[in-house]
Amino acid sequence: MNGSPDRAIEAQGLGKRFGIRWVLRGVTLDVARGEAAGLLGPNGSGKSTILRILGTLLRPNAGSATVNGLDIVGDASEVRGQIGYLAHTPGLYEDLTARENLVFAADMLGLSHGLADSSLERVGLAKVANNRVRGFSAGMQRRLALARLIMRNPKVLLLDEPYSNLDDEGVDLMNSVIREIIGSGGAALLALHELAPAKGMIDRTLKLIDGRISIAHRDRAAQDHAMLASV
Amino acid sequence: MSLRDDWRRTRAIAMKDLTTEIRAKAGFNGVASLAVTILILLGLALGPDAAALRNAAVGAVWLATLFSGVLAFNRSFQVELESGALEPLLLYPGPRWPIFAGKLLGNLIFVGLMVLIVMLVGIVLFGITVPDTWPELLAVVALGVVGLVVLGTFYASMSSRSRAREVLLPLLLFPMLVPVLLAATTASKALLGADLMHEAGAWIRLLIGFDTLFLVATFLAFEHVIEA
Image (cartoon, rainbow over all chains, first blue to last red; front, side, top):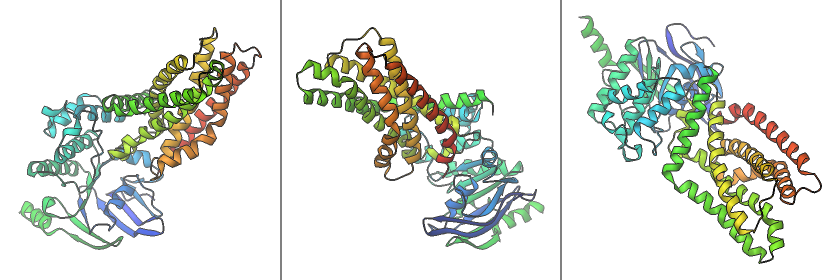
């Protein structure tokens, strides 16, 4: 499947089964370049599964999807180079310091270690750079995971509950990162429990119920924002 | 990505695993304690007969290495799973083999250190006289450890996502290790006994053959094993 050039994410009839239970049933969605879409739905509706499939962490049992025109199964390695995936758990090494975690990421990405320091500065963790992550609060761990994501310079963001455990300042930081990436022609798909922290960020919401996209509509706040901007 | 980048990733994973182990401490201490306990128990079970102890020494050392090694292999992927770091690890672009190579390198250093301790304790406990053929003996131990660690790391990655991984790993690993352990123990025993029948050479060649085969096969298969 080759996606259309203006679509950052395109999925057709995605299905995923765990054992005999279908978690996703024929999900079709797309996210345009320069767009942030919110994926809403109750617990267990399949939001995280969609993100994990698009992030190449799971293989779909049915359907196909592309990220920036790259097939998520056939071109998985290239897709991984394009995305910034933030999981529900930060996935950090607790016995390493904040800086060591990012230096490790820099090594894995083939980047300079200097990027680790600038990313720590950006998320406001420079002062605790040499502290072990074990002593960090959940919000600080979230910020560190965000710093790791920034280092990747992703074109497409896949964010699973990105605002959880973040204080107001952290929410602003997250939104500024999303805005920056969308502003440079990227796209974002956010799995959300509640829309409030993402208000004004989301261009379109997709409602997922029982493994299917049931409603898709443009976000009113975003439309108002766009209208005001045009005036 | 170039081979240089892949080596950087390999080294980063090994260093990260070793740093985590050094800081956590419990891992190495637990594994080494288990190995020494097995040696002591076997020594006590065999009684004070010096000849019986010397005859059983090689088997005891490899047995202690095997059981404590299984604990070490399980730990190497448990660290990733406990912190939810396996997914970020799999999300880095590029080939998967540096992940396996890094885990392998980390486990080789970890198990290598443990084997050194086991050997020293074994020499003292079982009253072993270090033979003139000690360089060959060390080579056999190194080859045996490589075979053990290659298969152990591979099967630990395979069983890492299973809830029954502690049970699954030995079930998968032990049958595959039979040729490596057979060659390693027979060659070690021959070298400790001055190798009068000149049989060590054949076992060492067999060990090299199995190590090569397992190395190639596991590197080729890892990409498919680690994918969900």
